[in-house]
Length: 365
Picture (tube, rainbow, N blue to C red):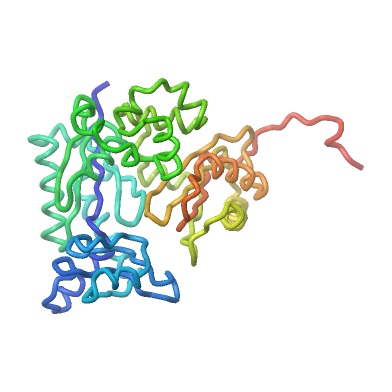
């Protein structure tokens, strides 16, 4: 079996880029990306936090997620642009439609990023980098904004590569490049290592991704359970997860919601998970489907996303069962950081419930 070729495509500062592109299209002479600017300031929906920032704004020390008031203290002449989520959905759709022309095997994981399984299509191109350059330049020239593209043989390394130097760049991170390109990075920069995990690792004197890669995984499991094994695998570039194309997405039922304010306690988060599970269960029942797998998704206030899935012993369409499993997954995933978005998704659907062994106590008059 030939090695896979995976692209991770990520829009550079998506909200700000899309607002800037639209304003230029409408005749505005100022490009928000070239001046200290942010997307934010909508007190009603996001409590006045920075949703996206320009590179000039970053030079003032402005960070995503901080209060707009703090950002203005750092840069009094900061340009504020309110968010326009309808516009962002439109630009996201245009991007995916454009990318489909290059390769239809796409898994969209958020409004501004996706994976592309370019394995078969790569054989027809001069090189993976040349194909990625054509995609990147076409997006820029056609839609008016830039993307980073990471290239590797699996999704994890492709995502890590796309996070290297920005904007408007292409980076590779193949297994043979891990030691030189990834192991020197701080451990907190590894995908799936949040603040809590990083703090635990630093107490163990694991400071870089290379340190983590060379740690005995049993030691990590003793401190961090299954998550310790997972991040050890990631530090070593191990990931065999497939690109979930649109066809496979139709085989699942799920729902996600952006919270009106960041959840900071498990109680708040699980209240939302219960509501999501009820909605998902209602849709399963409407479609006459039973789920054999459930997954929980978290997006932190830092915009880092994590998810985990669990196979069910028996396929179900019951809200309470989905909720119990979603909570178990949440407890495994959550690192204690403020939560911006929660999602629950079911897959491995069947239209016939699996037979369940019953006992005498299951029978009632």
